[in-house]
Length: 160
Image (tube, rainbow, N blue to C red; front, side):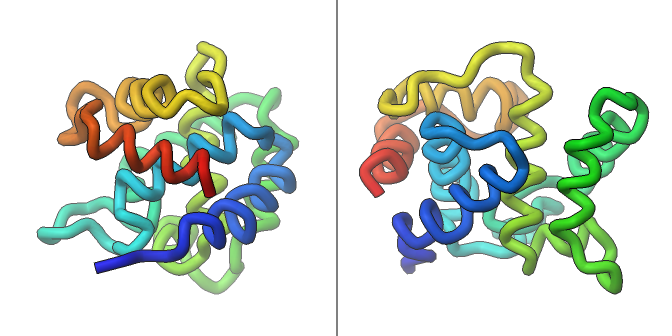
């Protein structure tokens, strides 16, 4: 079962979203494209098996809400918060927009990475992008692993 074309996702959703958010660049674009590919195969809008994760980037509601608390609790993030709010629809709860609002879901995944103090990996290293995804996004508690399948997804993102 296939998902969205990786190049369409990368250049029609991820790159313009991250540019609008002010957090773009080749490493971020490849990281976010690869994240969607490893988290959902860019195909699932809700977690397989009935889990709580939502959207192509498979963000859990608790993570979504924690990120918003971090944004609103610190005035230093006011501009980023404003840019995120502009990507939402006012008549749908933000958390539910992770499912159908690709720009917003991508932006929230980028915010998750943004709160990591380390630099983004090299834009062309599938192995390093995959390891960064595992450490920051999937975390030690997540089911994801750094293996040939996941590294290949990041290689697909780079090539797209």
